[in-house]
Length: 117
Length: 111
Image (cartoon, rainbow over all chains, first blue to last red):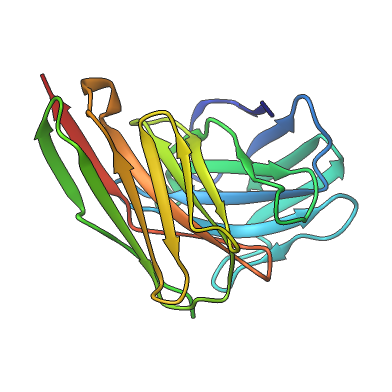
């Protein structure tokens, strides 16, 4: 099946620093990638949708200047948390999809645990 | 606004029981519905995807049904095993391309 990887799997940083998380589709070309965040014991909340070569579309309430998304190629998307603060600590999960048809699933990465001290 | 709710929120059962997990959604205009499994601290594993034109899908001991008109889906797990312990999430895909996730059911199957 389709494989999506994320790097790093976990990161601890100091408040005020920026952190970059990578999401890669390993065996397919992802025309669309999605970024989610998940707080403990809660469900996944969509942050933004990105199409290769286009600007990301952010969900209401998500600061685009704080969560920078780049989808420069069909196999790589990055999420940069700028000037991270403790309230940004969360589990970030990406997903990737090859096409937009009804049979095209989103395949999820293993997630990245971000802890901001 | 589409809202997805799962009942029960948590479930603890002895090994061998047959289980039913429920998922309800408020807007029937969905593209498809998907059930996922999430182990603690891990990503999501897709279990079953039901297209909007389908009524059920089966994979091994898992069977998922979909009733769009009533806004409901159920995940049936037969002969549960301790290895089935995880959080189960349902998600509906909207025509706008987004996946809206449910609140999840935390399942524990004890030997």
